[in-house]
Amino acid sequence: MTTMPPDCTPASGPVDAPAMRTAMGHFATGVAVVTTALDGIPHGMTVNSLTSVSLSPPLILVCLTTGARTTDAILSADRFALNVLSTRQEQLALRFARRGEDHFSGLPVKTGAHEVPVIPDALAHLECSVYRALTAGDHEVVIGEVSKVCSREGKPLGFLGGRFSDVVDRGHEPVAWFF
Ligand SMILES: Cc1cc2nc3c(=O)[nH]c(=O)nc-3n(C[C@H](O)[C@H](O)[C@H](O)COP(=O)(O)O)c2cc1C
Image (cartoon, rainbow, N blue to C red; front, side, top):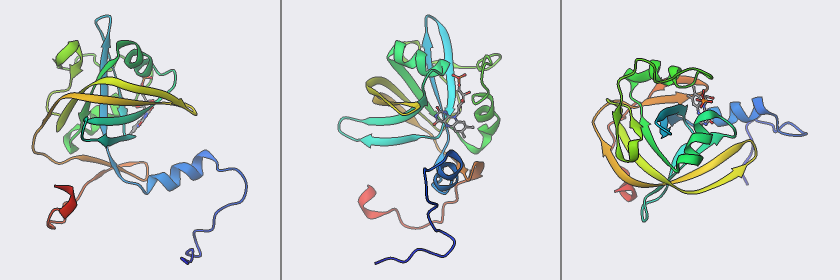
């Protein structure tokens, strides 16, 4: 049986948003911008709720606030791209997290397959079609099937405890089962 450290006693009663944020803040992630286009208008938002789901077929998932402009555009267009950000793109992460702005104003973008905009200099682009989508609480869980992928070398932008962070490579051997 594992014993709980003294400073980690579960509070009684319903789990509130700050407690969830604090707990999940220990789960470090990368940062990406999810982009799409609907009727020729580009949309995008910063996300960190991104994970790999399956290699065969290649599936990823991302959780998007229900009713956000980008969420609605993705669900209508059925297509989106994920742009994995580098440490040089922190300002871009902030730009795409501001509500109600024209996130693409003055931003050079390339157009990927199916007219979906992709952000140049991102560490990776994953171009996807919507494979499944389901509502869960106040978010839409969107599973994407990846049709095109490209990656380049660089330092990924991290997100930890509600702050942007570096991801440190400890120089260890790759974990055996991963490759
Ligand atoms: C680091 C970071 C990670 C975020 N991750 C998510 C996420 O995974 N899902 C989400 O719905 N919003 C996330 N947000 C918030 C959205 O980026 C923000 O609400 C965005 O402005 C919504 O775009 P729109 O409503 O203009 O389309 C994140 C914000 C930041 C700064």
